[in-house]
Each structure stands twice: as C-alpha cells, then as structure tokens.
Amino acid sequence: MPNNKQPSKGYLSVASKNQNFYVYAINLIESVKDYYPDARYCLVTDEAFLDGRESIVDDLILTSGEAIGAYRAKLWGMARSPYDQTMYLDADMTCEHEDIEFVFDDLRDRDMVFHELSKERENYFAVKYFNYGGKKEHMKLCGGVCLYNSAKPIVKEFMEDWWQYYSKQYAGNWMPESFDKAEFNKNLKVFDQTTLWWLTEKLEKYKDLNIGYFDDDIRWNYFSQYAYDMLQSKSGKPPVMRHFSGSLPKDQLIV
Image 1 (cartoon, rainbow, N blue to C red):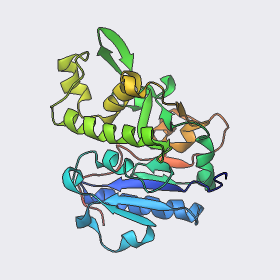
Image 2: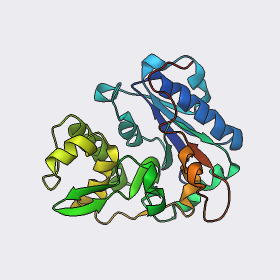
Image 3: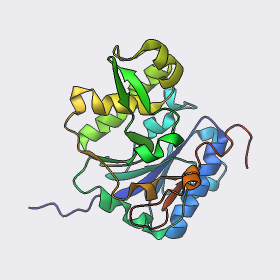
C-alpha cells in the first residue's frame, strides 16, 4: 500500500549565547507568521532567555550540553529539526513577502539548498578565497539560510557532523591538513562555512549529496548591504527574506 502521508514542513531558527539573538528570532518568527499565518516554526534557544514571547512558536527546543551558549549552536539546532523538511533561517533576518509559503517548492528532489556566494556578491562576505593543498579555493555556499530534507538519514548525519566538526574546529582541536595553518587560524577557524565547504567539497562520505541553490536565491537571503550595489533578483521580484548580518548589535542588550 502506497504511503500518501505528506511530509511535515517547518521553519527553524536558533538563538543562543546572546539574548539579543532571542529578541531577533522572536521578531523574525512574528514576521514570517504575518505573511504566512499557517507556518510551523521551531525555535531552538537557551532556557535562560525565555520570557514568555516564545509562546508564538509551534515547537520549542532548549539547548543542552555543549550547545548551551555555544558560538554556533545553530548547527546543533539544525540537526534536531522536528520537521521532515526544514527551512533554517538566521535569527537576524526578517520576512518581507508572502512567497515565504512556497520556499519548500525549491527543495524538489534535492537534499539541501543554499544561497550562493557568487562573484557579484563577494565584496559582502568576510572570507571567500583561501589556500587548500597549494591551490586557491573559494567558498560557494552561504550558511545563513538552508532548506534541507531533514528527515533523510544522510542529511541528519550531515547536520550532526557539521556541528561536531565545527565544534572541534572552533576549539582548535581539528583542522584538515591541506589547509595552510597560519591562514586557517587567522581567517577560517571561526567560520562554520569553512566546515561546510570541507564537508561538501572534500569529505567522501557526502560526495553524493544532491546540493543546489535556490532558483532565485538572492530573494531568500537578501543581505541588507546588497542594496549598496543595487543587486536584484533574476526575476525582478522583491526580497522574501532580508538579512541584517553585521548591522545589528550583538552585545548591547535589546529588549
């Protein structure tokens, strides 16, 4: 008998380490639900931040163990999505368009979908080019948003590995030997996108993952700085998700 059960679909954000991320996440979730009232949303956060505003979410996961207050607890949270298909969104974003409802159409038969670190956008990313094995390499995927088939075992393993490898990388306990050590420690160690690049480009275990970009990907992760160069979507449609990375305070408390 065929299984006609539809996969569950939902959005996920993580707020840890700094209370401002909790405030930003609540604002983000409210904006998504303003444009898509039926959206299911999961918030992953530290218990210490809870103040009642988390009641807006459909699913709440509290960080535990090493994830409490972790620098990139987002990776821990992504690996624990309660949905079959998940749209991860950085907390410092806001929704601006009703097309948010249709983002899951971009997943199709793919395992993961990202925003591209394209040539025209390279001025807006901290690190794009680096040395690996004596060759010049470049970042391709932006981890600020990710649409992924979270029920698929290999994808769940990928997300857990991303968290585990990054944690060791950030602590200075792991570095692929082909990186230049001085450059790695200076420019690459703190970035989860370094780990993402290595997992998707160099680790044999994940060579067969079907990874792609959103069809009109700038709409799904429109960094506020893109406006400086008047970057627009291929379709001419306005942004769905605007990203304020680098332009919102992380340490000065916002309530």
